[in-house]
Image 1: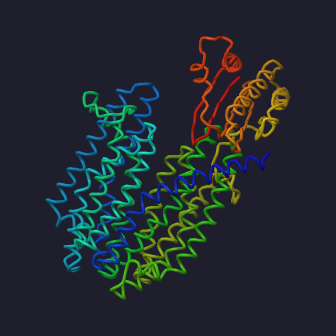
Image 2: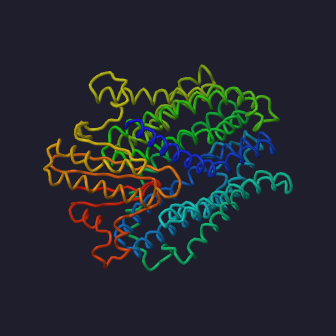
Length: 588
C-alpha cells in the first residue's frame, strides 16, 4: 500500500512542480531576455547600468506586494462568508492604494533622478554608465502603475476562477517585452531608454489583458468605490508586513553587492555582477518551484495531520532538488563561457569576471534548493517566527559578513564565493536548530520536520487504502469496520464508518472512473479518542457530494439516499477541491 501512496504523492508532486516551473519561467523569461539583449546589443556599459537599477526594480514592487497579500487574505475571508460587496471594497481599496503609490514613485523618479542614481551607486566616476542608469530608471518608471495593476489583478484571477486570463497575461507580458526589446535594438536604436520603455509598455499591455476579466458577465469582482473603507487599509498593511521583511532584505542584499562590485572593479565589476545576477534569476526558478510545490502539498498533509505523507513528500522533494540542481550546476559550470558570451562581448575584463563568477557561484544551487524546501515547509507548518529569522539570515545575515570577510583576500571572487558559503551556513543553522530541538545530534529527516510529538496518530490507529478500480471498493466496508472495532469503536459506529467509505468511494468510482483515464481514490481512516475521521481524496472530475445532493432532485427524499444518510450520521461532512483533487472529510 505504501508503494501505491508513494506513487500518488510522486504524481501529485510532479504535476504541481511542472505548473510552478512553467508559471515562474513565463513570468521570469522577459526579465532574463532584457539582460541578454542589453548585453548582446548595447554593450558592457549598458548591462552595468541595467545592473545598477536592480535594487530600484525590486524596491518599487515592495508596497504592491504588501498590499496584495493583505488583499488576498481579507478577500478570501469575506468570500468565505459570502460577503461579496465587502470583498469588492477590499479589492477597490488595494487597487487605489497600489496605483497611488506607483504614481508617487513615478513622479519621484522623474523629479529626483540624480539623487536616486547616487543612492544606487552610479557615481560620476562611472562616466557614461551614470546617464544610462538615469535613462533606464525614468523609462521603467512609466510602467510602475501598470506593474502595480498587474500585481493586484493577478491573484484576483485566482479568486475569481479565471486562471486562464492570468496565464494569457503572463505570456503576453513576456512576448511583448521580448518583441519590444528587439524592435528597440534592431529598428529604433533607442538604447537603454528604449529597453525601459519596452518593459513599461509590455506591463501596460498585460494590465489591459487582465482588465478584460472585469467586463465579463460572470466576474464577481469590480471596482466599487462606495464599498471602500479606509480603516481596512491598516489591517491590509499589517497582514502584508512579512513581505517587507523578505523583499526589503533582498533589496538591501542587492544594493550591497552592486556597491561592492563598483568599489572593487568599477564598471567591469558591476557589469559582471549584473550578468550573473540576471542569469541567476533563471536558476532560482528551480528551488522556488520546488519549495512552492512542497509548501502547497505539505499544507494539505499538515492539515490532515498525516506525518507519514509529509515525510514521503519531503524525501521526494529533496531527491528531486538534488538531482535537478546537480545536473544544472554541472551544465552551467561546463557552459560558463557560452553563458558569459550572451552578456559580455566588448570588455575582456568584465568577461573574465563573469566567467569566473559563474563557476565559483554555481555551487550555491543545490544548497539553495535544500534550504528553500525546508524554509517553505516551515512556512506551511505555521512556524512564522522561524521563517522570518531564516529569511533575514538567508538574505543578508550570512552573505554580507562572509563577503566582507573574504574581500580583503579574494577581491571580486569574494562576492561569488559568498553565495554558496552563505547557503552552507544556512543549512548548518537548520542542523544546529534541529539538534537543539531534539536534544541530540540527528541526521534523521523525520526530526527535521519539527512536528509536535502528538501530531500524528499511532500506526495502529490509522488505516490507509488506495483504490484504483471498482473491484477494490467491495472490501472497503469490512476492512474499515474491523479496523474501527480493533481500535475500540463501538460496533454501530464501526459499521457506519464502513458504509460511509463504501458508499462514497463507490460514488467516486461510478462518476469519475468513466473517462478512460487511470484514477485513484486515496482513503485514510484515523481514530482519535472516540472519534472516527475519514478522508477520501481522488483525482477525478470535481464532485462535491454536498452540492450534488442539493442540485439533483433535492425535493425527492429517495434521491441520493446514501449521501443523505452519511450526512445525517456524521458530525462533520466537508468537501474542498484543491490542486485538482477532490477532498472529502467525514467525522463520526
